[in-house]
Image (cartoon, rainbow, N blue to C red; front, top):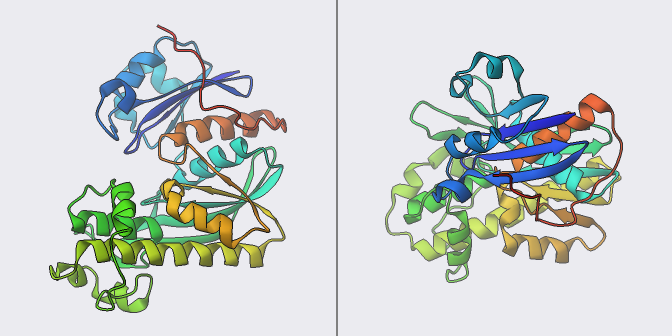
Length: 305
């Protein structure tokens, strides 16, 4: 069975899976040369080079497909954090693991509620059980009014500083030049939730200090999530994935703080990895395949012209 998987988010991608192995993977931005490109124009052209049994879509609207035969072959997987978790788990080489997914915005669950932080216990062939799920609410003005999460905190601060909301890496880098500013309220508290976004309208905050604060507080938040996961499971193999798993400063500190835990930090933890995770999950779900295929290289197949 050959699966074509397309993920539409802020970093669209295409994965082709055959007999349980990814034989081709490409990000839209590599083709369009537009950073974090979410439009699938070029990868859909690449898709025409492949024969496949069916097409798996995560986060993509049906309107992108005009041919009736494509519409009939499409399956949808609208669980964003599940696709992140699957990408990390199947690449880790672990037989069973706790998967911590932390990113900006996950799937829309109901009303104005979205995935924010999710922890799964995963095992073969395709068992992903949520043990922790922290959500947040976005109102009509696109402002959070309940339960700030790690990824959204970084997006908020990045935008305030003057970066794009997807430029969390720049904010992480800037944090090294800041210092502790007691006038900046601590993130992830009821007080911060009650005063946001007005608290960030105060332009007197030093941008370096604000970057320092969000880096410090998100590190504490992830440490809390790890400790909560340890309490709820007896596992010692953990996977970190989702956009925040690209925070190398935090990753280094996590490895130092939890030497008893064996961590796999997913290298394709941005949204481009969701097509990869969706394809892997669908394969193991439909075939009950328990073969462990750890990621051994980031070179993922030959390109077909």
